[in-house]
Length: 438
Image (cartoon, rainbow, N blue to C red):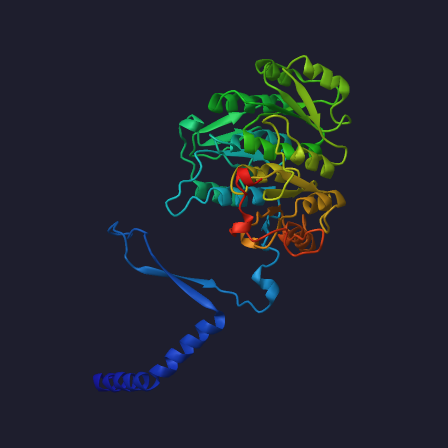
């Protein structure tokens, strides 16, 4: 083609582009809107192959933005209701990651925890014993590994938490319990034991070095996971160690630990079928005092523990205005995953259910007994809040809705049916009378 022909072709192309530029823009915009695309412009920090310098050229990353068309797609009420929040993990590893990030947001100039405890997915005993490390001053949330590997979600949560070590953790960033995988790049401490009792005693020795002598010791069966689950919440709340006993005796590792705490009161969580009277007699010879709380039914066992109080030991939750955590007994390690929620936020005991579709009668009665009420002014009331741990395989939305109703604050009435038991708060009539007028 000659130079004249090339000039004419270029001129024709410019004329067509000028005439159709609006059409081209419209096509591009329509395509972007139709795909629901959002674009993130990110700097390309890859070095230039020849000069070694960093290229300033941006790269475009497209993300699909789904259009919500159904109310169910909004995530409510499964994600949360007015009185409940769900940690919707498909397994304990997911729940542990979510809880750790909820308790330690680690963003917006807020520092993450000094250390993180890793437990293996198969080790519910190690997880429950390690819950004492979630209490102050250590405050190490639990993350879950699996079969010698670190799941992607756990690794992602660990990067976000970015534990830095501190004096409260003896400079350690990771406590690896039992067979938990130990990721590279962290100052880690491995905690080992040949059986649950030895491993729990090893965790307790670390806890004592970091936090000092405990006020109490909590003993549970190493063979009854559903009955032991509530111990995790209390350990995270108090820092009290959780040690394991057999049905008819005390393992040597637990015996040695109790000898160190001979003037510390001990409490046994669980019925006689889990820890026999003979085992109780053996424990009594080793400690200052021992007392049992528990029930044959795991749901009732957790409720009795939530109600229990003996001196400074126990939740003593017998009135409204508290936080609660509910886990399914079929996912034992969720007790350890959720433990940090019992020692922060709306601090509260771990309750359990053996049903996923409806609230068991005993749990229904307990929450109904603690249902908050108000007389005249709901803004002056106390409130209950419940964390529900697990996805819809652990709890249905129907279950969550029932819990929400049980936790909802409600107006109370007098015996005569009046809407209020007295004058609204803040009125002169509501103030106590002077002593000389009583």
